[in-house]
Image (cartoon, rainbow, N blue to C red; front, side):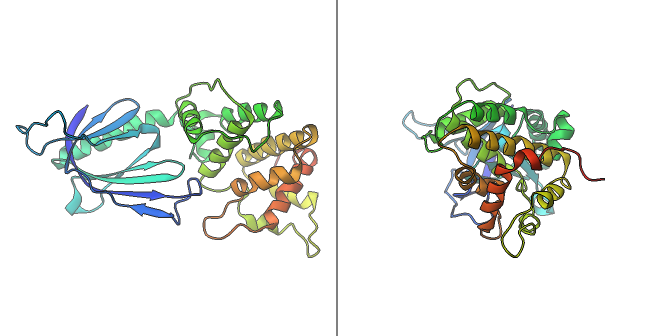
Length: 310
């Protein structure tokens, strides 16, 4: 399906902290052609600039501005004002870039039709989507406590001796994310790729897995000593989905620290804490590194019971 639209504006926000756009490091508002042909397929929304009038033609040397948006990254926001009844906001969110398009249709009816159509296509893709979905919503949608890809990632991490510092390309990571969101099995895993995808998944959650951090910091006494019992009681007040993911990850980290010479609870904590306990509004309290290290070291005792306190 296709139509001719006007892109009223585009705002691109960039961040160095995945999926955190509270304080973007750079905001761009590029100049665009006025008219675009918008084409919707099962997996993509494509915008290609076109002449203003139907009888105008391009020369073969004219540059075409083509914008390709993956459906799995999109969210549609209809206008709430009477003056903008022909306008839709299309928001594309990637790990380090968020783009907001204001699209104007030729009339109110076409705008309404495309709003419905886009949401239908997006919702059909969401059934497969993993990143950015709250754990409770994922559970309700799939009847699984957490995405099965987390089991696969943890299995890869348990069965390899590669180090955290091995380099993987950004393109390789993005291709893996696309495969996961399409429900396609990833064939080529390695330890570093698995940890990078895990970190991106954790950063894509609406709230950190260890949230709110002040509750966890409350388990540190005045002498800086942590209590396994206090932490266990706190963790088991969380949702069953949160507990299940915590248990999976921290028992995996515990296994790695005890079975791989180059890994320790501290080295794992240094890599994973910013993704487990990030804070959009403040800097990360350094004591959270100690808490994550403690959870890794004592995971088999702290997570031995999945049941919440009655």
